Length: 332
Image 1 (cartoon, helix red, strand yellow):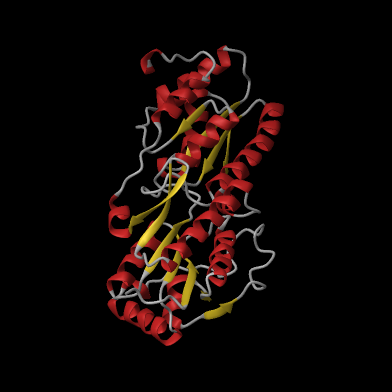
Image 2 (tube, helix red, strand yellow; image 1 turned 180 degrees about the horizontal axis):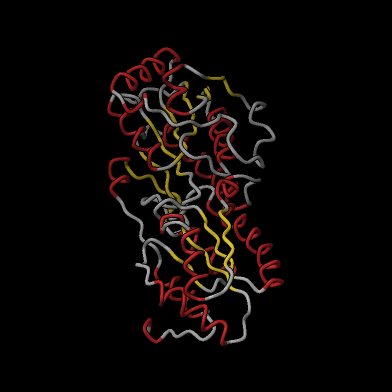
C-alpha cells in the first residue's frame, strides 16, 4: 500500500526562466486541493542543504502568475555535488517531514533530483529553461517568453541599423543549443542564423548571404548568433574585415531571462505543476513531467536524462529559403 502523501517541498534550481512562478503557484494550489501541505525550499539544492524554507499557502502564491524570476530564488550548489551535501539535504527532508520534492529547472536540476531519489527521497521534475534543450520534453517553461523578448529587442535594433545602413550581429542565449537562435532568426527575418548544430562555413553562411542580400537591394543586415557558436564580437570583426561593412555587436545576455511570462509559458507551467502534484498524489514518483505532441507525459528520470533533442533542421532550411538571392536547391 502506497504511503499517503502529507507534505511535499518545491524548489527552483539552475538558471531562472519566466514561468517558474506560475509552476510554483500550480504546485502549491494543486497540493492544497489534494489535502497536501507544501513547503517552499529557497535557493534550490543549496537551500535544501541549509534548511532554507518557507511554508506556502494559497495566499503566499497569489499574484505571482505574471511575475518573472522565481519567488523561491535559485542558486548553484557545489555542496550538493558531494555525498556529504546530499546527505545533509536528505536530513533536511526528514526534519521537515517531506514525502517528496518537486524540482523545477533544467538538466542539472534533474541530475540533482536523480541523486536525491537514489537516497530515498521521491522527486518529480518540471522542465524550465529558456534554452528549450531538455531532451525528454518538446517544450520547456520560459522558451516562448525568451524568444519574444529577443524578438522585441532585435526589432528595435533593426530600426537603427536601417537608419545607418549597418550590419547588426546579435548574440542570443541557449548554451550549446540553437533552438532559441533559430526560432528568433526566422521570426525577425535574419540574413543569417549561426547555430552550434550546423558547422560554420563563414564564407558560405555569412559573407555570401550578406552579399546576396545586398545585391537584392538591402542596405542593412541582421545576423543572429547562438552563444554556443562562439564570440559574436569576433564574428562582427570578421564581417567588417571580409565584407567591408560596419558591423555592430549586441549581446542580449540575461535580459532574455527576465520579464513577465507569456500566456503560453503561464499555461504550460500551470499544467506541468498540476501534473507534478497529481503524480505524487496518485503514487507515482521519480519522473519528469514532459510535453509530448501537445500532451503531458511522465518519463522516469533515468530514462529522461538519456534522451537527446536535435535541432529541427527543416526550420533551418526554411530560414535559408527566406533569404533574398538564396537557393533551397540543396535542401529539396
